[in-house]
Image 1 (cartoon, rainbow, N blue to C red):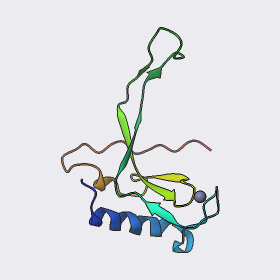
Image 2: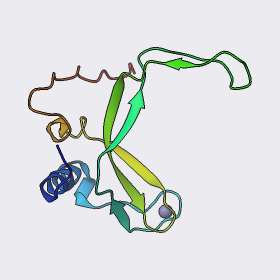
Image 3: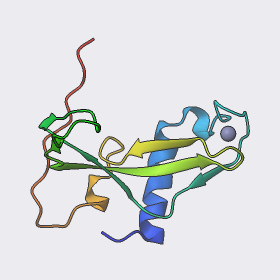
Image 4: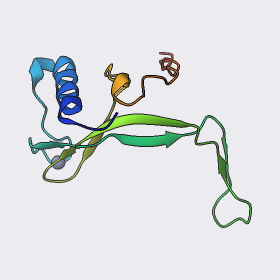
Length: 112
Ligand SMILES: [Zn+2]
């Protein structure tokens, strides 16, 4: 789905659901309280298979890059400290997949 005002509204509603008292906290780096929500989805690639060598060695590295995790970014307006919020974990997976796509596996939690 393309980023739109509708998508932005859904993201803001999802953030309001998870924020204690619906307020953003001060930046953990500089203490400022003004945040910028990205007007676009951020995809971070990940690999289920990976091996590699240091760059100085002649062998090349290999990563499958077979997964993309969808995020929105919130940046501190003063220092640029940026938080990436996973849209799937916010319950907004429908914003970043087409209607005919296969639903990805549910993320597994790390054992405690
Ligand atoms: Zn900051």
